[in-house]
Amino acid sequence: MGEDVFNKFNFPIYKNDNFFVPFASGSSVYDAFVICPCSMGTLGRIASGISNDLITRTADVILKERKKLILITREMPLNLIQIENMRKITLSGGIICPASPSFYSKAKTIDDLAFTVVDRIIDLIGLENKTFRW
Image (spheres, helix red, strand yellow):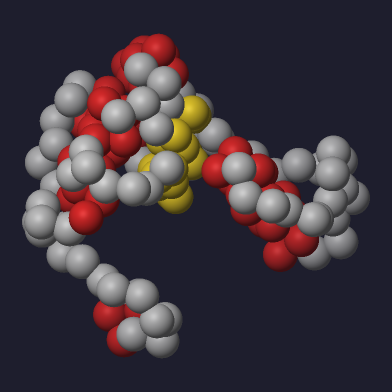
């Protein structure tokens, strides 16, 4: 995806090495941080406390401030190292949410199926969501 795709949206874009953005500080007002998709490499760095870029720094801040960190994982199958890293994140207060669609809604399209994951993320964040209830 080219950077021009992101220019269509009316929100700031930050470089991944910029640690001077509001959400990279514990004094920020943000309540939740979602990483979607979250690779096992990113999850492993977060679980190990490595804050070498803006994403892992923000995750570290969210955890230390006891706010809601939601990691939408995508890989499978999992090895023991990945499972242990998920355990560490969970014990630290984070939420592991695999990008597994819900089939309860009897989705008719792939988009409908994908939105079951999006709906679950919205619920986990705590935003109002008036879509399919499982």
